[in-house]
Image (cartoon, rainbow, N blue to C red; front, side, top):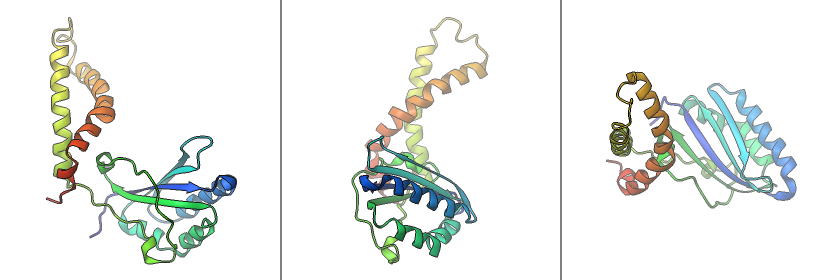
Length: 198
């Protein structure tokens, strides 16, 4: 089943520390090659730290069809083969929409597969159904919003502020609370339920 939503691929690679300069050129070459393909929406890569051998990379395509065209291309196979000497391990995941919120970042590593083999394809990790994502977000947002409203109601002048300003302040305060604390907590608590397909 294909999807018409943009797909982001998240990759964690461990690179030979003696070949960082080569790896930097190699990664940029991959970005330049992907950039020529229809549906390419962008990419980025960072190292975990100045002395780190772990690199985190993202790239995004408009839909599964354009992503598959890139991932099955001879140019990508050639590019992957060029990295075999210094990429020690690799792990990748595909994500659509906001379901990346519903997973912990990948840790650890797996052996690099032969780029020409069918097993080298990045596996599509099933995301929770949209209705489960919506329920999960609501279960986090409702109590946080309710508590914030109760806390702000007795603040002098709060009720006299224009509605748009109260909503602006509320969202400015609650968005980071939801992103960094509430959603990670709720998704961990509901992990078993979110993993079931129904």
